[in-house]
Length: 121
Image 1 (cartoon, rainbow, N blue to C red):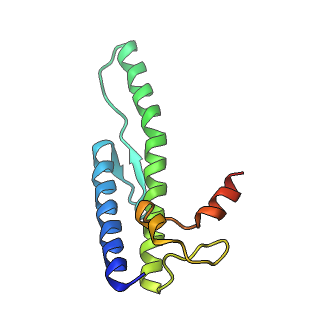
Image 2: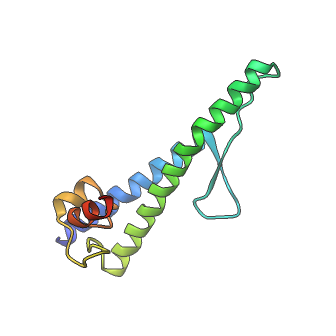
């Protein structure tokens, strides 16, 4: 991968990071206890039993989204750190170079496709 491609990937990762943080603001608040850690806002629909049930349901539905976004954000941070350290695009399992085609699809990929398939089996 050349420097121009790496710079483009870094810019794309930074853009994804910004978009995820903006998405968090729609339904969560930053947790002061941890960097890139968010707490889902508990919705307030009203005081009736049905409204309270809806609040709990909405809150429960947002938790897996929050967890997924935090995981993606953490992977983006790892990828950005790897770029800075000069080892971005190397499979964490086998040590081989991850093809650029895969990295363009999954910017924060930490494994080559073969290793990822083996792990999922």
